[in-house]
Length: 391
Ligand SMILES: [Zn+2]
Picture 1: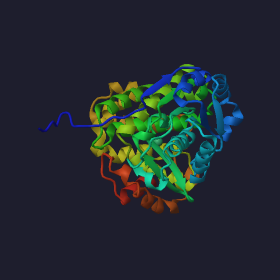
Picture 2 (picture 1 turned 135 degrees about the horizontal axis):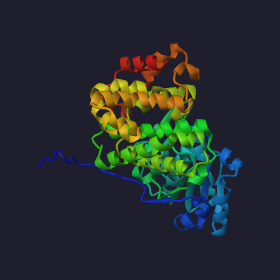
Picture 3 (picture 1 turned 45 degrees about the vertical axis):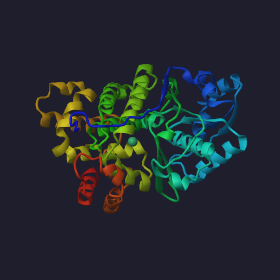
Picture 4 (picture 1 turned 90 degrees about the vertical axis):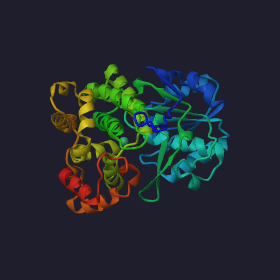
């Protein structure tokens, strides 16, 4: 029997979420029972030097847990880093893995738990649904508010010079995500702005995704995420020690992550990847640079959807009449927000020469897994036109 009003969907997320200011100080008590007696603690050298891990590490020691620290994760983590993390964990005979940091550390922790637990061949695990498991118990603690990696079933690793490969499988969702907004109080304004916009893009693209698995839960989560992120992003950027703003951003980023983990992102991300991959522009900023231009391109097909969520992010737009007007104002408000937050608005401002745009457009077309979700079909000439507009 057909059921057009309620098409089938699947929804997976992290089964346990702990949101609590100061939770990192009690990490041993919270995650110890899940992770077992010997854990691999995956983080990056910057956080380690800042002392941001100290309270969590002390609480693990207090809980009588033996900790092996792997603190060599870099931005856009490499296969060599992942391999080293797995070898470190195996040598120590760990019983569980904790990931502590930004998206990179969490991505490495996910695959370290998988490969250490199952011993499977990574080359057979790349792609969607190819991981076999079982993985080791896994706890993730995000220290930025943007990627939502603590609730997404994806890990992206850089293979060779700049090839990004991903493993996507519900198996690498962690057992628990521990969200402590205190960890994000010291994030610099530029990172807060870029990662916050990235989270907003996750919500917008999840809501409008043409994926057959776009679903009522993702839509609800995306709207709630936009309400939190839209209301608090300016305060988080300009008054970083505001706990309410930091809490809203961390929560909003997670909700957006739950949304797009099940209703995947589209052309904004597809066009952002060549900017990040070739020119090493941070992921959030890459998204912000193409965001208004991609939404303008999508508007002929997606204006109704954008109009539905416009006032979630920008409550003043509730007074705008008409789908077209509200959609247009939404796109302008997003562009104005990036500017207000101090992010560069043009590709030329981040060192990209006009002569690179054609190659970038060709590269963006390789992101077929994302482009299929875009509300309007996008061809290479469209990608080039978008890059020109963004240049
Ligand atoms: Zn993103």
